Image (cartoon, rainbow, N blue to C red; front, side, top):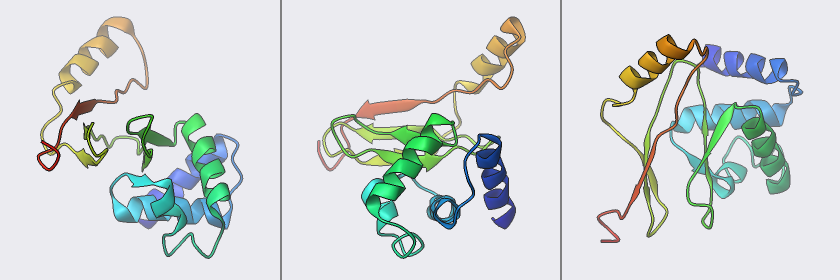
Length: 141
């Protein structure tokens, strides 16, 4: 995990972001939880609550999203969830349109073969995709 944190910090620095304790703790929190988290969850997490306020966490999330370090998930009228984008690691998500919960899809991604074909035919490099399915979860149904 330490190497993954360090790699992510290096990606941030390459994008022109300053290395701060708050940045490190935000990355650590997202990696340790291994699931998308809301701004409120991040701001009150044990690593970040002592480092900075909610507004600082929000600004950090915005900058990280602008530079493709994290991904914003969810319905726009609901609380957004944030997840770390890790090169070579991929997750697709189910999002409930009723309550807004988000869960990772535990199945092989059907788009990888198509992504390879597109890369081969177009010559695009660093190609990736983001897949989100929307529906009503069993609790809301």
